[in-house]
Structures are given as C-alpha cells and as structure tokens.
Image (cartoon, rainbow, N blue to C red):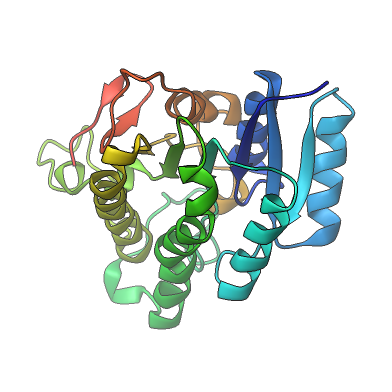
Length: 252
C-alpha cells in the first residue's frame, strides 16, 4: 500500500510509543518507529508489519546529536517531507527501583539523585528539542506538519498545587519538572512555527501501565494513545500551543 503521509514516533519499540505507531499506521501513515536498540526496534516494527501496517525501524538515540542528524538524513533520503513528529521517548530513572511493589509511585525530592535528574532531562527535555530541530526541515516541507510532545499530568504546576488532593500529582521532582519544562518547550516551538502552519501541542496520556512505572498505572496503552493520535491528526482548525488529555485542555 502506498501512503501519502509520514510520521515518526520516538521511543516506539514498546508501550505508549508502540501503540501510537500502530494507531497512526492504521490510519494510513507510513511510520518510522524510532528506537535506539536495533534488536528491539526491528522486532517491534516487524510485529506491526505482520498486522499489515507500513512501519519501519529508524535508529534514533534522542540523547545523541549525531544520531538525530543521521536519522533525519535517513528519512530525507526516502521522503520529501514529514507530516507528524511524536516526541514520545521518556525515562524516569530511580523511581521504580526505590519503591516496593505496593508503594505509590512517588519519590521525595530529598531522596532524588542528581545524576538521575540530569539523565531524565537529557531524554525528556533536550531529546525533544534535539529531534525537533533535526527533523524541522522535513516538517516544514509538509503542507500541514504536526508535532506532539508526550507530556504528563505531573508536568502541571496547577495540579501539583491542588490543595484538595483529589487531582494532586505525585511529588516527583526530576520527572515532573522535566515534563513542566517540556510543556514550556511546546509553547516556544508553537509560537515560532504557527506562521509556518505547523501545530505543536502537549499530550497527557495519563497514568498508564508501562515499564516506566513498573506497570502500576491504571490505564491501557490504547487509552493513552488516544490523545496523542488526535493531536497528531488535527485539521487546519485545530489548536496549537496547548496541553490536553482526551477530555480537553489541561491547566498548566
């Protein structure tokens, strides 16, 4: 099947990224499945191809400038444009290992490790900037480019300050502040790229059962991918510079 639209999803060999790649491919996109590990990436892409989907592994380590540049050149050699970029790759080192199986997914700031925070920012903050910059020429060549930053409820300062506790996020300083920074990056790119027709939004997939949280989350990857795919396929009247879950706009 020949497809006219093309998408890249980072960190897509498992979890929410894999499901997002599946959903986009099922709607007719040619999808590059970004992953740094060749064995896992090729296996994930092959699994989706076995479902009849047009998915191909793309070697991409989001913390490496040269890897992002090579990945962009690889796609440019095969396509004249990129319609969708989903910056999904993310980590939360130290949190799951620090908790027992029945503990809440939370680590006090006083116990956080500086090296883990730096590693988190390199993937969750600098990674999306690095990849977006590398692929921007291809996105600008699309008639309607879309960029989705996969954020989190934990990135909302308003939720963190919720005194009622009902919607208050866990107090996870490194991971949470990385997603707050990603929200700010979303707005910054959106402001620059709006005149060029590119829409940039942040998606909160919710507390989803993935490796990142030791599969403690109560949502499925199918539920989580809903808002990501929706923002990736916005029409010309859709929003930009926003922060959303599947129910609508969220408080920053």
